Length: 494
Image 1 (cartoon, rainbow, N blue to C red):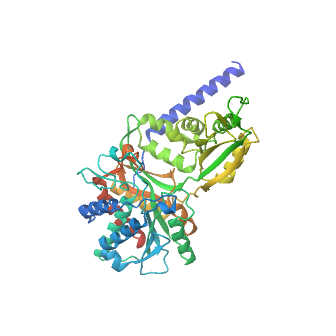
Image 2: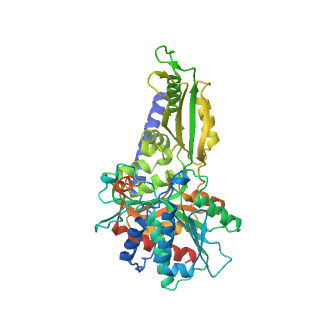
Image 3: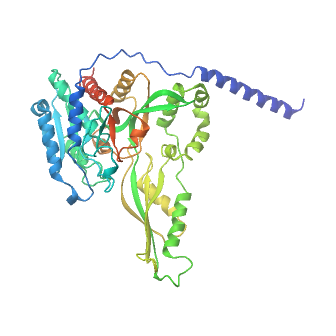
């Protein structure tokens, strides 16, 4: 037998062995069974929580980038509502106004040597798009309860979270619970105003830092229990994604200057034409995908819970990384999990149809993966745009957050509660695509996590910031129970 035949047979034998090993490995690629005790029943007044959330929604605390457009009386009314609705919190916790409308509560613990924990929420909501009010099944600020859903702006983002925190603390006080470590409730007022320099959360975090306070942990909005029923992949499961980081955000303007003139005697390329070429350059050169550890862990957890064909693929993530990245970068909803995204969002040229533009400009919005900086994005633009006469100008932005550890007590408590409260949960770390107030607290805390304990379908998630925002009433009581348990465990190291 010739040498090449030995080599061929050897390669074939190795491939057969790999296939056999993979088949066996997939058969044993199952979820890790956690030996967790069942949770005792939690005393929650669901009707009261729903009434509180309905009342909160009826106060239109809308934030705008333009300071003068904000109705500050509504924020004052919301603060007064919290005072009246939660008398035990008002009597037991200290409260102070930070900035124009943010609120900081402190629940004093018995052991000042312990670092405090913080629970974050924001009071503000986005406006309803003018002209769409009639498209709502129930008015956007009605807080209507139809027996299945509670309707209105803020029902998902994020007065549901804020109210459940308040209900949990009010109930814990009534039950005689006293925390060992301080508990802070931090309610910003302008989270929905992207990259705001006057962020209420930023002011609270800086105030805590000025007082020498280092937080043990932070929990804010971000992930949730998302229904994951995918035929032949996952059957009737809930994916509990705990956000351990969030993407950065930056806007850059690219522009081209030209002589202008009458459109009857145009050059081969107007400023707008040159700009179009530059836009094409940027869109053609996307950032390279990368599988971060959180993503490999997420895929592994899904694979362990998936059907056998899924196990066959995901039990070998280490080997299939190039294939996984190639597939994910072609699917927009998946690509954002593995790379910095590029989006041309706005453009401007001539003010009239028969006038050549003297300046044409476009805005690019980038959502950066952790590890990619605003400076990196700017260098990328200079590198990929071939026309060096194109001007590149920073507009606004914030850096991506660092990854919080998944071996912290805070993360482990959240993961265990998710599994105990919903046995069908697949718990995994997660990267938050949008921005939250949590990023501002990185100056006083390393354990910054993002999770809202509500069971939501993908369809409902799509209603956030949109018409017919609503929350299933069946998930509100669980939100209160989660926060009661979370505070009890973390505040007293249970």
